[in-house]
Length: 240
Length: 147
Image (tube, rainbow over the protein chains, first blue to last red):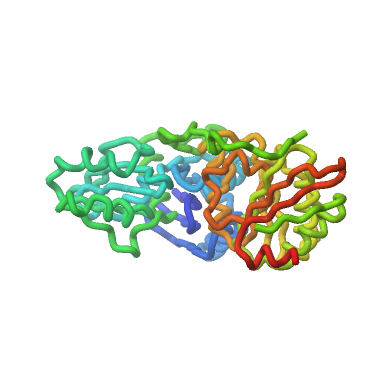
């Protein structure tokens, strides 16, 4: 079975093709925010390198968020577009789970963190055991960084922060939590091979959906509905 | 701060054109002022100054229009944006990471999240109907484009 996986949920974009759990190719670019320009050529490149055509792909996988709103939309829309003509199955993968995936080889608690601005992070926790198991402990959430201290203070295992928020969270908590580290930079960011590998497991568990049921996941934090107008300031323009 | 009197939409566009010529990329230009004050006219002039061959129109429904060029221009209209979540959903923070210029109509609605170094431009009514008092607040380099 062949899965084409996509990630464009943050600054980088990547495309991977997987055959029965083996990565055939990984295309990766980190050239600024131009996913709408780079993503489809990378898909074409991945197919060309593997000698496959779109017809050979059995299922499509994509990181559906949380993440950059524009990036997530591009990834999900691209997969919907490719999967719809032949109604191929689609697999939604949490961006935070894809980020944690490279840590699954170590015995640790993986804390996936993406910078959500305003002292907030998108966060999910996973227990990594027995060289390859990634067991979810918490749901994907948008949280104030400070609230993580209470959630993590009783954990005895080695904790790894991983993701584009790892330095932010590590610096906020390192003086109070002794068992925390950041993941090595080269594995810190989401990539399409992790998305496709997780999707393969999900597919076997029957978690694929139709292209029409594939949706982005935008998490809302507690400040999401806050107005951004500056209060008590006379707006001098007359309008109308 | 630099205040200039514009007697007509043409003069407003000319001022915008001068500012457009001075832009280097990554600037955020925040426009303030109500309906019919000349904000879209201003963006047209700005695009001209940036040598963008673009059909500029107010992105009230699309939220953002992209005009391609050597330095791209991202034209936002925040009229319908009320909350932080709304703003995130427009992709505004993603565009801040690019090398393009961002110009925002209805900046009033997102004032709290404007980057500190934004170039702020306020439109106010003058003495007669067609007259506008336009005030630019920002780095001296940009203010000097109106000398």
